[in-house]
Image (cartoon, rainbow, N blue to C red):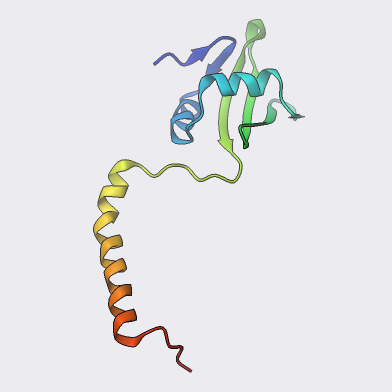
Length: 114
């Protein structure tokens, strides 16, 4: 995939985060070009905008010819998606835990012990 979009250039890290966090390039473009809030330090800008109820954060730095290098991006209050392989690996343990909980409820009931 192309790691540039309009006037944005994405680092490898930022590109991976787009996929992990289900954020499109167009959403990042909207955040950078019309943010709700902007913060600036010596080198970087942080852009924040709420789109469809998701508070998108983008860290970028200006590069030549009016382009922005996107360093990282995330959604405030959301966790990254777990990789599919991890879901497959942990599935047997989750099923076992669920069965054990049902077994203990059946044996001991919902009584609280003192």
